[in-house]
Image (cartoon, rainbow, N blue to C red; front, side, top):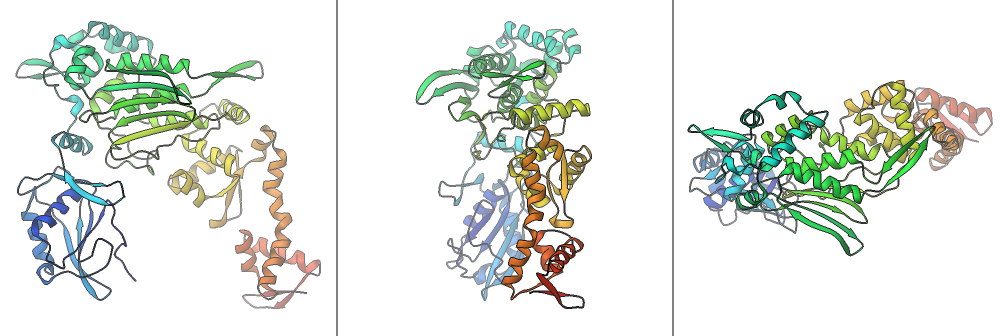
Length: 550
């Protein structure tokens, strides 16, 4: 059985050794991979996956390991072994992710990326990308460093007033900051840094307090745009390099005009349901500015069109963050100083879990979940779909949270949301849909069962879950509840008979249990019913008793 992958990707590389691969080509690939996500290089495999074997020159795995260590700076320690596939020897080289930026001994800094056709390539790493890479590895905070060419005079007094007003009026703002002088406040929020006894603005300081003309001059990467399209007509199209606090206020004002609300009656109260959740929009916007890569050209873009709202920002996910672990990965970002300042001001989520708020904003209204699937290595893209709110589901969630005296966790909300849409799911399927660990899901599901919101059916791996009778009833869907809990049992005899007929009329208790996803005891009860009705009889006894159709 072949163990070598059949094609290349970002972490798998094939290299032909028919003509004795040159040392510098091998080292380039090693450097590119260690500076990206690490991976495995197979020497002796063609680009199309055909195994042709490693040359005698490279069959010394220890020698190749030493060559790589000597030709990289700092030295990369790889693991190399000769493996045999399809009767041919292949040198398998496992490359770790470097915790710093590595170059070849000749000074070449390289990285690995996927081309448009999905195949990998190694390309030069530019100077600004070195800063980005170090930020990803938590070795450098670009936002905390001084901004070249900036002086304290580049701070805008009107932005200081805006800053203090936000801290004062925002519930999450640290009010003790207001007692500080301007100089003390700058130091506390890392807006300035001292070098050789002189005070200079940091990148964070300029992004929040800088004059717009100076930001445009000194930080051409700090651009933002807000666009609204109706069909092909452009309704709003504005671009700015204003300081962030001003941008937040402007973009929130713009969004209000294009975010209609619908009032719904909840008993004696009227509740406004917006097209896009306002808290989710704010978190998405702040995340875009907070975690963008300020070393590369690009624009933080907000687009509202007929399909929904898109918020995109330059720079991919930080190292270690993927689509599969967005909700579980330890919170960290590219710009810690900027993130910390926005938290203390009261704009960003203090726990670093703003992503939870973004998901919550869609789930609470029974809408499709936020979509990050179009994110690439150079751009993070959040899409929130336009969709009609499920008013009954929204009311149900609100009532339950009031009854419990606490908000439901994001995990609980996700489970309720997918059970609402999918009706009945096993734990494996819920894990697949949510990308959450089975352990966390089981705890949340058991809590929902105790709260009377979810019911379980069956045992073991075949155990499935659906919304409780209470939930269906409160959503005026009692018929659907009866269908979920009763239709299977009505169909049990028919399914058992159908299976028996496909097995020459014979069936066992284990067959029925596997077919219906029920326990062996429950399976025996269903078979006994058929025996009592005269449709089946016991054919032979023993450990694996067989039953036969009459």
